Length: 98
Image (cartoon, rainbow, N blue to C red; front, side, top):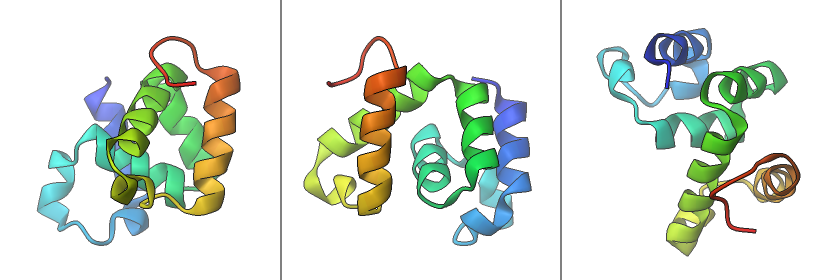
């Protein structure tokens, strides 16, 4: 993963990561970035995330998160959850649950 590109994505979308202190934003994990961008990001932010990490990697993280527990699954808004399940089923290859 391109750490510099992810940091630029986070910096360009600081308002989405309001709950994270400025000095901790460099320590955000992939899981947090994916969940926040998919849930709250606009089309441009989501496209950048997919370009930086790749559709397959984002799908892998998404499916790992929703299969971990019902609590994690509920971290995604219902429409976001449904949309990205359909999106990744169609566009992602590899290690995803289908």
